Length: 261
Image (cartoon, rainbow, N blue to C red; front, side):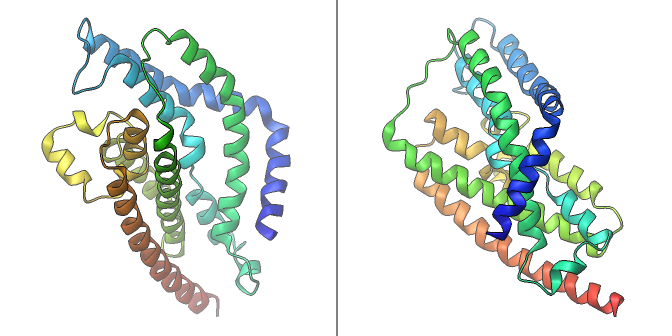
């Protein structure tokens, strides 16, 4: 309940800056829409490239824009700020996690941004309807939902761990920026991983980033013949990342109390 109140308070704050939300969506959508145009130009008269049709590219990059509000975020910076300015002090002796609190607060921004983006999403889908040939398979719904949920957990654990690094460093933004670059290359945000060089594809299998956006999109597009294997691998990364998060958090708290004491 305490985290729900944090969410509601953040939601009230976000509703005061609706114009900012619209502008942030416009800025965020420019990149993916540009990539759609680039792939359209590369395809030319060809029906597909690497199994991806023009309609697949539209769905792929639209999800990268809209799905960011479901799966993505950037609350590592808020955690780092709370640690640096001492805000964490008032939570250490209470049954309240600053990590979960900042995550809950960010959901307000994501929810309002997602609602703002819905009309734009519908407009793009309407304008691109001639390219899209996608049929929804009801039996895949459970796999899509699970892969998106697990992808969101993986992303949140990485963000939380990056934020905790503020116990050791003055600024975490270089690590947050590195995360963004890595996610673009090894997570499929820049281009579908299936179209990248084989060497890069082999590396991504051993990293958690492809399981945040790329694999859920593959299931949505029907390009994943064994969605259960994706869920299984996501589960393994969740366990590993959670254990890493706990270790880093405990080490950070010990260091923080040592300095404060």
